[in-house]
Length: 291
Image (tube, rainbow, N blue to C red; front, side):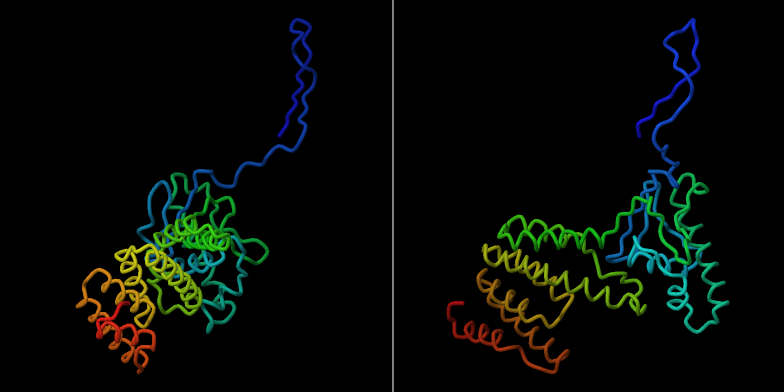
């Protein structure tokens, strides 16, 4: 802001200015300090931390769940009734409203423990019937970082900048430390988000494994293919990668073993047999043909 101040005129001091005026709008004090940075880990074990430390204790589990719910769309307000319906669907409106107020009070108390001057912070706001996280918070969420790298990677891939795209995919893969809110596997509102993120992760792993395969980095391909199977036991492309890479590394016994595991997993999970591409690859191995 541009500010002009005019002070009283003093004959003895001609450099003084006349009057007192301010041009422009003076900025209002920040609601919370710029130091109030919050880092949230949703991929894997849920963790909330600030420059002053991490949350180790929750005043109530409902407060924890409500924060997780707000973090699904962290920069948008959530209508009060939506929270009541999500967490107290069988209660009366009055009871659900009282429970929500209590949980929000607990949430504010818990979040205030992240900072040196908690009483000056207004971390969760209630405006026009909706709750939201204070937009002044410097909020860093691993899910957003993961998705950003995925988006940049796909964009670079479309521009045929493959190596740059792979770098973005590698960053995304590193951020993915576990499934979305894996501590809360039975909360219905987490299901679609969790599976969508897992799909993105599997796509990333497939791209990284394919790149390793094209560059003859067989050990790298094995690494990413095994990670794929840790999320989906029936991924036929991952099994084919493993069989092929172990043959290329001269470890025929490991190639055969991974085909056997493929057969077992496919039978147990789908009551089926490996697909034609996988069985054809295995058949060529048995015949000692080039793969």
